[in-house]
Length: 255
Image 1 (cartoon, rainbow, N blue to C red):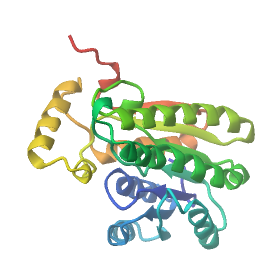
Image 2: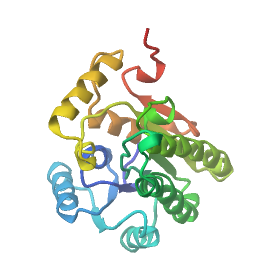
Image 3: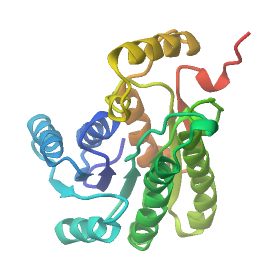
Image 4: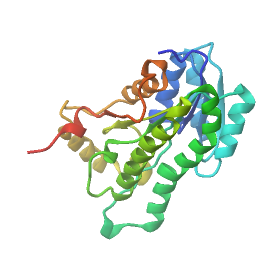
């Protein structure tokens, strides 16, 4: 997909969708700056990439996207000298309706899923203009549709989608493309991180299967393939797009 020798930053690369994106980008020939907080998992992602794709260069950046934007950019530049693609994948869930809303959790979700993306993208943009690069934001079908009980998460992703569209227009004259991938329910460990136990997760998984018209949930590599496409020259005339990878969920109205 024409990513050979491109320098790609992937946040949240230590597991789940981010780790899959790292593998797919590497398969397409990109050199990687892998960003995450869990150094052991981050190194596992790096080891997997190196095992599969011998010619790919990798850098691990142990960093918190809510605090370390400048360090992420600088460490990437120190190793590679340029930035071609920024994949804003790092994110957290928020659970609960308005009546039970914990404002500290609300702030944390917005800070990670929205503000950190704005700050990191802002820091990357001067370098992306030089390379006529691309930004790919990993959003959610929750940014397009509305799911009661996930207020903070839905707000964060809807705002992220607006960010994608507006910044795409702002940067189009400079040749920088900005797009979003909006997954449906994808099997990762993100739900366990907010305390959803196995029994509740299994029930959620079953409901998700029934709410996706294709009759199944998604796989991390299906999201990663979409991200790689949007990052590549195959999508050279695509900007401001929200690409649902959701088995038709975005288009589904229950009877």
